[in-house]
Length: 108
Image (tube, rainbow, N blue to C red; front, side):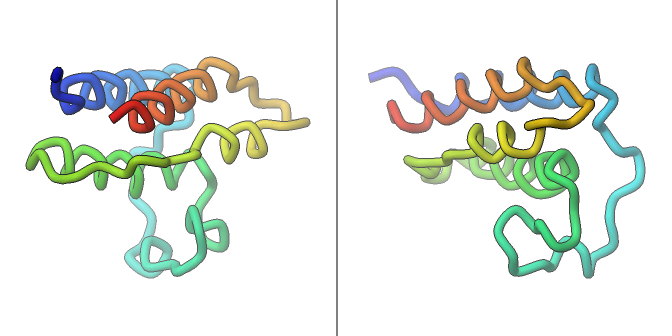
């Protein structure tokens, strides 16, 4: 059976590239307090793109690097759809990339 880790590593790099392309990449990290939020997706302290950049990408990259068990269900694409709904930001490519990550994780 083919390892999932190379596929997820590639998808994470593509996700970062998409965030940069959409100019949603922050050069300055949020405060440690903001990152310590206990709310899902840190909704009380971070924007969704910040959560992707400073929480999701580092955690997933760490798991991939160490070949640790990955979540089987991520369900992150629906959160992205909600974030971009009705806003001026256009994020269909970002949502599609997150859907790819969701699908690949579900496949195992």
